[in-house]
Image (cartoon, rainbow, N blue to C red; front, side, top):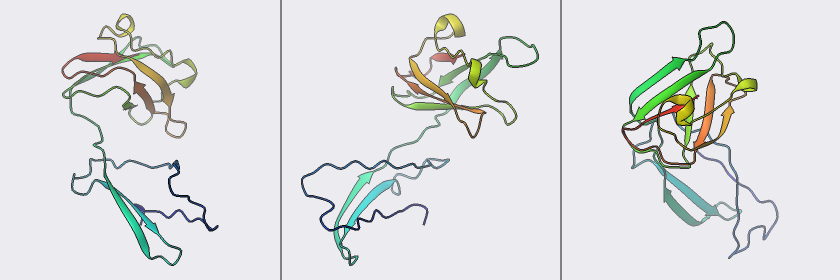
Length: 162
């Protein structure tokens, strides 16, 4: 089952009560939002003989993409080779700060990682300035650019990235 995994501690007393433990997992989000009644994280604690000891359930989170009322890609130049574009969008719902946005260009189009010159400022996009950080081109899929919002994107406001 790709929706579960086991952490197995081979030594006795590996986990102590009253201690905080952090586990980092690499996960892939589904391509669509999971229905709320199924969107749960469940953590089961079992003894070495697989007898359950404790179960904790946590509500999952809603994934974006949000509906865009407008999405536009504007070329800055039409010269041959790597060229900057301005991506402008208007979201129908508020996107909170600290959320991540991924911009996927059509297959065959790649973000020019070496000369990204990324900006989300009004002076560069002719749209409302939005705070953003860490624009990163996916090394396995060069048509995907992911960034983190450092300010919220309010609904029905045009923002842009260059």
